[in-house]
Length: 126
Image 1 (cartoon, helix red, strand yellow):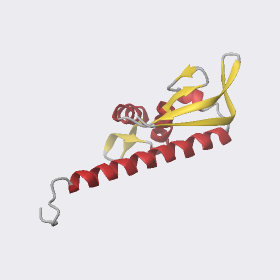
Image 2 (spheres, one colour; image 1 turned 90 degrees about the vertical axis):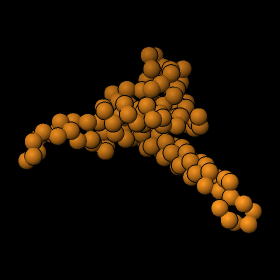
Image 3 (cartoon, helix red, strand yellow; image 1 turned 180 degrees about the vertical axis):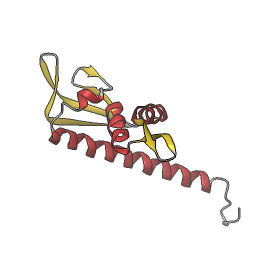
Image 4 (tube, helix red, strand yellow; image 1 turned 120 degrees about the vertical axis):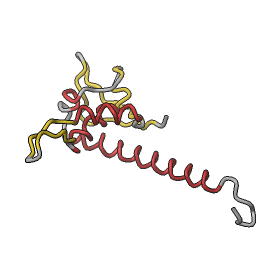
């Protein structure tokens, strides 16, 4: 599983210390399932009650789960802990998570391309 390490400017207060070193990890299917469930809210609509997923809440829930370690503390963080970070540090985490997601997507695309090419003859006939 790919990871990305970064240092926060302001950090997160953990006990008596301020943790600044963060390790992010790739999102797993389990993270997506749990974050989606946490981001669901019942909403009254003209058609009756429906469960809607907040895209913003989903993103925050996923980011909290991507934190594998901060300082000496193992992740994930809670959304409440994530909310105590400075705006600057939240931006750093978001950019790092986006880079990690992009790298994962590129690897997935390369794998799909490789699978598509497997078994093709040198002459190009499938």
